[in-house]
Image 1 (tube, rainbow, N blue to C red):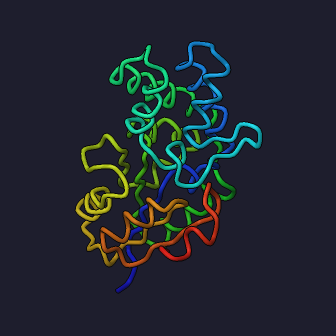
Image 2: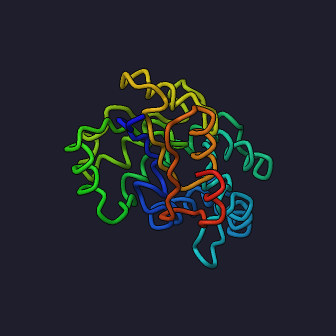
Length: 217
């Protein structure tokens, strides 16, 4: 069946993950640690960020998880923060700082323009919040190319559940077999598989290596 729609992951796929999120993760960890540098480094390590190399591990909570999952992890080690308040605070800092630090992958605008010209329907499915997705993409004037943007809090369920795929299909009037999912993490490929999409494409612009994605793509 012909591919008529493409559902993109955001971070590591449309945006350069390390350039965008390594500095934001540091700020978030320091906030949660209340200025305790040792605790901040431990929170980053638990989340999957090696601050020495300024990289984030594939499949880690920081690379592929939602704010809810990160808050649950960090709240166990920073009990001064309640879970609900911590989730809201992290969503807020990710949205505000994401708009400042977001860095697109090379050729983003030209690629989206070409795909739109070819008549493809484009969407975004991210583990970020929906507001965070809009805030980080807006500076590059690319939201015009997307007919669908969903985050973990949009009501369709988080990755790797298929809810965002199925919601995109409904919004675009497509069957799953007509959709390609593009992402840089196992959660993206697993979401596509569970949604029974026609094609799953793993990219190496994010946190995963070829050998991690190839069996699922």
